[in-house]
Image 1 (cartoon, helix red, strand yellow):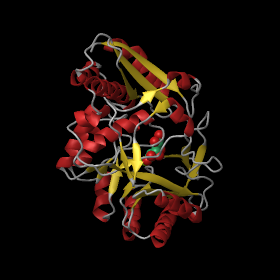
Image 2: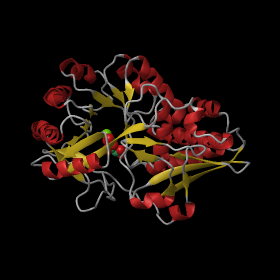
Image 3: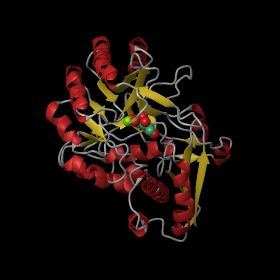
Image 4: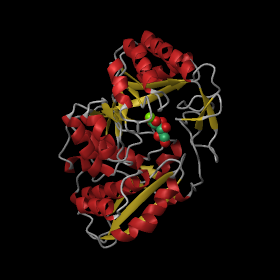
Length: 404
Ligand code: GCO
Ligand code: MG
């Protein structure tokens, strides 16, 4: 099982994706997602120039050793670019091991701890009526958990909504230069409880309700938000404050019982350590493709399990179907699983990526094909060339840059 080649495929079926394909001397291939939204080519170079050449000739079955070799051997550790590159290698090697042994990856990880993976869908609207219509769609489709976002009245644009007039396109990274959005915290804090009240009033309490704050508040504002949402029994509020300021979460915790989810911008167990061990959060949202792959994310979830923190991995559309398949295999096996985000992918993505996962009754199953159960059609991929695309940035009314 020696590695004979490692190739990076860059394609844009609906949005930009970077995929690593590792091939062994026996012709077995494995895939890993290496997409870092808005900074894609940094990971492409990291892989092509510095990682792929180091893989040739190595035993593809020594997944732990290759992980350590890339992490410790680089001297420069952590960070999104490094950890996304290592993740892609790691997932591709698990994929190869599954294909070699004829087993789905979740079996290799010790087997299923559940029958399916609860996912949450994304409902949104330009106003509350549109949001309620969208929530109805997810209810009709059988979702047991729904994230809700709606345009904040008085603001020209609100991040995290379906793009008006573009069908189901979500959070499109569609600009050659980032556009400026304008943000107003008091307007948002007034609006958020109204939105949740409308959703609970219409649909009741027999489904999980989630909301993403996109790192925009101060600790006390976040505490106020958490308190104001307590009557609506949130499953979580996500990223209430910028995640790197970890003691901020102590303040939020002291004031509200609304559960908190954090971690989509984290890359290693070290980034999560204090939030977990000090029980400052309820869900850890690190993703398989930005946190060193299955091998490393498993350690994060194991640490979290000691402290009653559950998993809730990031699964936005800017993580490719390869990432989503990898996440599902791990989700099947962790005892402290909480929920998995599922934003879905735009239509052309299914031309390029053949998937095996299946949605049934609010749960997703990774399927029983050997490995990750995902293939890439490189001819189709070549039809969708890459060009740089950016999400918007966020400014306050006075023009100052703000978090998003
Ligand atoms: C989420 C995330 C996304 C991010 C995106 C950035 O919860 O799904 O916040 O909305 O904005 O993944 O690349
Ligand atoms: Mg988020």
